Amino acid sequence: MAKEKPAALQIETFADHHVITQPNPLRNVLRRIAEKDLDDPVARAEKALAGLSGEFKNWMTVESERLAAAYAAILKNGFTDLTSQELFRAAHDIKGDAATFGFPSAGAAADSLCRIIEHAPNLGAVPPQLIAHHVNAIQAIAGERTRLDTVTTAAELSRKLRGIADEYLMQVNRDRPEHLEAILAPSLVPAD
Amino acid sequence: MFHIDFNKLRFLVCDDNPHMRRILRTLLHSFGAREVYESEDGATALEMYTHCVPDIVITDWSMPIFDGLELAQMIRQPESKGNPYAPIIMLTGHSEKRRVTMARDAGVTEFLAKPISAKGLYQRILNVVAHPRPFIKTKTYFGPDRRRNTNNAYIGPERRVGGEMEVMQQPSLLDKARAGI
Image (cartoon, rainbow over all chains, first blue to last red):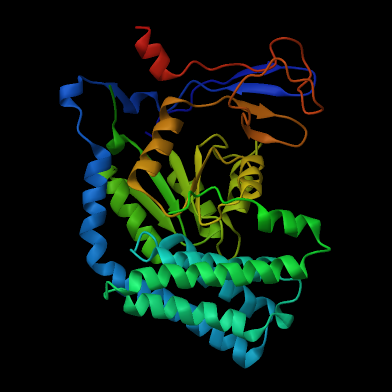
């Protein structure tokens, strides 16, 4: 597709803006077909994703070890731009990936940790146990998921961590309305 | 019913997490895509964007060197030699409304919050293929029309100036096909 010559643009000029319409360069990839001939690409993709699932447990372990290493670097060197960013990135990746890997509670705990890193006015002043508990919880959830009785415990643990983290963040941001607004704003991702 | 020939589409996937790249590659290949290029940071992605000329870019937000938001801003340079019009799908763990607004204002075409699902990704791709939006160029913005709905009654400060034809509607391919055009 991309090798094709770009189509001509139509430009309409208005007082303070231009509207630029490009004939759809991707029109050739759409085909109308009978319903009986329609395959289900989503089902095919879900099946392919299920085929990968044997690796998810290992991937979750890798991600949680990366988080633990980032936290260990902070314990050793303190909160610098570099160590804080790496902790955030590790937590943020888990927030995004863990549910896909089958560890939604680890994702929720990682989300809570991201909020602390993003909204605490001074990371050095955050109670050390608050961050440590998040890191430990994520590692425990990643390590224990195979036991069925841990699923409820993991969800409960994540909920409690989120509650404590939110309480802390609301307290320390009481004079920072823009952060308070972000902390209280609902997520776009529906809850479980 | 409509079918997308994924084998005619060229994708550029940009995510610093190798596991997410693997998942994306798996999903796109199972949709039928053959050409999927990958990069692990924004700088490499920008270079690949110029050389590989992808039809659709799927990018993470949070990445080292420069992030997905900066990548979108660099692609959306109207005077650039490359194609500034390619659809950009932002796939990210950020799930706050203000992040969606920031992505929109950087010229991102579609926003998809992680955790990823095959259905969510397919729908975003279908949207950019079947329902392309016109581009708007102002002093401060260049990118897909940020207004997905026309509201002629709006009189607030963000109303565009220029008379009745302020928003050009581009008929979607789906509508055209349904109308038998």
